[in-house]
Length: 126
Image 1 (cartoon, rainbow, N blue to C red):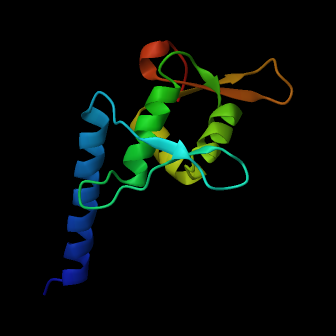
Image 2 (tube, one colour; image 1 turned 120 degrees about the vertical axis):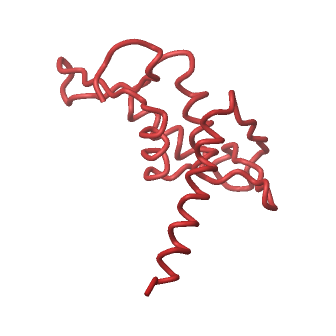
């Protein structure tokens, strides 16, 4: 006897994975920005509606790819900028994993600092 909720959960996860693969394989995903209506004055993504709206993970992947495209950055700075862009830390970490972003520790600094870079930007460890 099959358990239909498990099959439905598997189908939903496969659909999510297909969306992620599509988002990662695109050269870039344009995210339209508008002034946020809060006290910080930060920019926030425009809410997209409908079935073609990219998921938060797809937006995070595109944002992280664009953020690290030109140079490596300290992880602390990436997290701070992601928070400003309304990207949750866990979503950022998932995007990092899917993009195979490399983490390299600066052992000379006290406290230790991590630098993130896209794989094409050079060496480092995961």
